[in-house]
Amino acid sequence: MDRPTPDPDALAPTAPRSPASLAWWQERVLYQIFVPSFQDADGDGFGDLAGLISRLDHLSDLGIGAVWLTPIYATPFEDAGYDVTDFTQVGARFGDLPTFDRLLAGLHARDIRLILDFVPNHTSDRHPWFRESRASRASPRRDWYVWRDPGPEGSAPNNWLSRFGGSAWTHDARTDQSYYHAFLPSQPDLNWRNPEVRRAMHEVMRFWLRRGVDGFRIDAAAVLAEDAALRDDPPNPDFDGDTPPPERFRRLRTDSQVVTLDYLAELRRVVEEFPDRVLLGEVDTAPDKLPGFYGEGTRRLHLPLNYRLLSVPWKAAALAGAVDAFLDALPPGAWPNWVLGSHDKARIASRVGPAQARVAALMLLTLPGTPMLFAGDEIGMPNVPVPVDRMRDPFERLVPGYGLSRDPSRVPLPWTAGPGGGFSAVEPWLPAPCPPPVAPVAAQARDPASLLSLYRAVIALRRRRPEFRAGGYARLRAEGGVFAYARDLDGVRGIVALNLTPSRLEAEVGTGRILLSTRPGRGGACEGRLCLEPHEGVVIAA
Ligand code: GLC
Image (cartoon, rainbow, N blue to C red):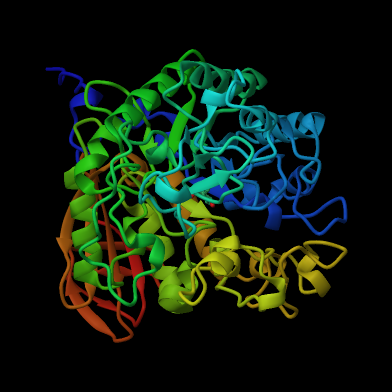
């Protein structure tokens, strides 16, 4: 008797799927490229699109299936390109539209999809829209941004704080009003309540979708709209001497507003005008809000990016608990995703150390759902200290003393052992230490014991064995330093066992054949009790 085909929209996130039913963004490994630090081709010290084209072999050899590029648009670069002056132009430092088309064709020829960063919340203050808006209260574009009369004696209209420090309002003497900015004063927020703004941004998406991009990562997706009544934020009860000042209040009035979900549903409809595209989103929100970002009944983001593993202690029970909590928070049909690094976070190799970085790789690539790998993590790039006189991230300057600079995870990637690491012929925009902090890509590619070789091997294993892409998920064990789980598909069971400690451990995880280990050269059978070497992770075919 034929089994009825389950409705994918009703499936629990831990249930197995039919591999043939998976969309590309569900089964592929996604790879985030921080473009300014990937590869410089034109010799200005900034990574660019031509540089990226010259590194396509690295992407194919790694086996990833899609790239997300951080912003490549025209920008004064006050926030690494997240300050855009023209959403439909490639910034001169990154290249031009013909080079973009060549990159897209080159990626597609290798069966790699391209996801662009879409920055809808704000523009640069040098964007023509903002110049017009700020020119006069009567400007037709006045309402494209969020302008309000100042409070008494020129004070801010309310207590909202910029995520980068200070008030979220900047007073503009010309028209004696203040504009709202969730981030830098030079990043004024667009007024998403204005339908003209929404239409204009939909057109931006269509421009790139028509060119052939496969989707977008929506920057700051949870903060598009603010409370219309401008009510103050309440105090943050967890605020103490160690909390950075921008976190003094709880962002109840500017984060995750209900109407923002409607705007995301609109963006989804735009994307769905084109076949087979994807919407990822930067959504740093409470677990109870997560289902809304996926959509309950209404379709919103395919993948609200999940950074939870970065903030839990690197211990078996805590990681297993974070995995369960995330999976439990998902609505039926939602597809999980996992992130261990980004241009906004500390490098995983520094957080957990080089030995555990191998365990982290195995976990990222075998948990149920889509893995997102941050370029550089495949070679174990650590945080690289950046001297004060070379600092580029405005965050550190504006909120000093809390170690908030994102520069250390943004330095250029080392490709070769030579000066500049093969990144650029000139001194790069952020320092490229020489010798590089880890063996460069070229050396790791030749070394079967390198982290890069491990990443390649696990990604290849995912391709070969559908249980790791589509299998159900069951936690087997999360105590005594070992986190182990099974991925089950049509009677085939894959087991992953991770030793999160520096000790040799024994664990009961099931019997089978060892397919892969984070320790090169390990193989053989596993009969009942498995011996895990310090910092070892293994994959077993049960
Ligand atoms: C997002 C980006 C971050 C940027 C901010 C403002 O959080 O990931 O890098 O600074 O938005 O655009």
